[in-house]
Image 1: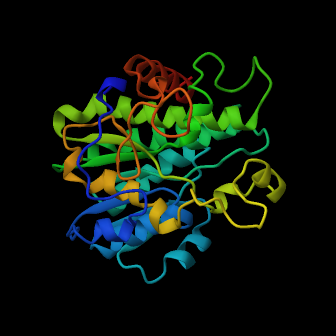
Image 2: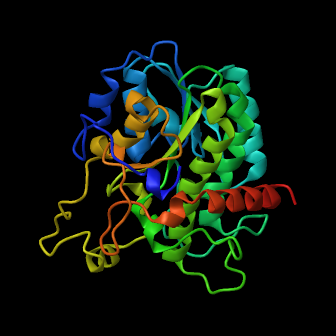
Length: 314
């Protein structure tokens, strides 16, 4: 997949469709999904939709008690411990997953952090890159051999914020340049898109496809490191205190994730970047829709893959 292949399909869903609406047309009994961060925000709605359609859902979570409380009563849903910023935790989580299931049909890399103050992991990695990309890279690769059934898919949550910056393969941890929280977030979201592209390249031949998605603007705990003044300055909150109308509900925000995991229209289109329940078109020079060429560049995906392996296996 490259920028030339970012062509829309005839999807019956759109920007205001909901995750539940999409999942309701599928019978997921006997299917197994894994959703990181699936206990709050759009992750929780993703779990609700998949479990409501009959799937068993595994939810790795940093806060197990909070996760169990949020997920109570949703059906076949189980929690596991995971700190995405810690490679050892990702490895332990993968082992715990193997103790619960021998197959994964939908591996959804949903968890993430945004625009946080500069922080480093114990390994010296910049926290947004480590959490949003490296943790998912480690977990998904440790579980990829469980994705054995026809139609198995990986969905990586990217963002329109990929337009802020491409993945930086030369200075991923802001060692050579001053830290900027939005540059760091943008880089990590470009990395998420490239990871899906690289994963797809390695597994499509055996029927496992991967997609990245921009879920839309949704007001959730993802904004925990932003204050109201900053959100007003960015135009997210208007003068009367209301949200900008471009923002989606959490039910709408989870829709593209569920669509990318389940839609038969995407078969054979692995590696695509999606938004509003469709494949995104190439971005125009101005504006905040579509996908930039660098986020669906196969060469960049291979470069990021090699870098990620080196960082996780020094």
